[in-house]
Amino acid sequence: MPRRAARVLLTARTVSVGVQALHDADDRLAVAIERVGPCTMRVNNDGTHFDHLARAIVYQQLSGSAAGTIHGRFVERCGEGGSPTPEHVLLHDETVLRGCGLSTAKTAAIRDLARHVVDRRLPLDIVETLDDEAIIEALVQVRGIGPWTAQMFLMFRLGRPDVLPVLDLGVRKGAQRIYRMRALPEIERLEKVARKWRPWSSIASWYCWRVLDLENVGGW
Image 1 (cartoon, helix red, strand yellow):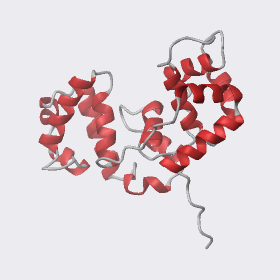
Image 2 (image 1 turned 180 degrees about the vertical axis):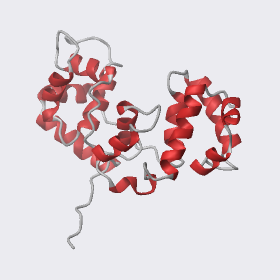
Image 3 (image 1 turned 90 degrees about the vertical axis):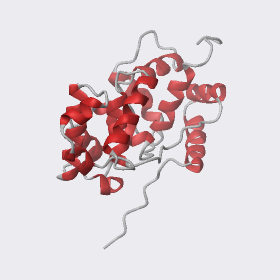
Image 4 (image 1 turned 180 degrees about the horizontal axis):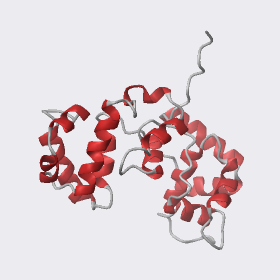
């Protein structure tokens, strides 16, 4: 049986390669790269995949400090001394999760996430072997996880290099600024612009976010 080709992941070395490739492929993005500087995008390897996704649910639509407090309680009460596992979550009834400060909707979402992992509709133990679309398809079946959250998981947890979050407002605003568009790009326009970004769309998206931190100078 032929071996599957090694998957390219975002590391310090491959990020450097990707930045140079983007710089060479797209003159306007090259200007943004020069103004922003080195890409500091890094993969978050802390904890487990399950804890990473549960944390993403907790943090939705909350300030960092409030979400951090709630997530800390969740880890303390459901983690059995470590990161919470799906099995630990399902051992507790909803009142325990609600007691952490989680809303009814987020409690239901975290429990649904746990069920999807336990019954292997979401096989987190082999998720690294799946392609991007298969991972997104499995994740969006979980209550409280949409395409954007799934794409952020691909980019910042699994280190997938060619993810384009077309509905992300920051990416759209950044692209509008870089390419001097009169209006925010719709999906088709952004996808057309991003053809030059492949196979490094994750890095290009990161630069779209970062250009918004720059002063509006030089025609931007």
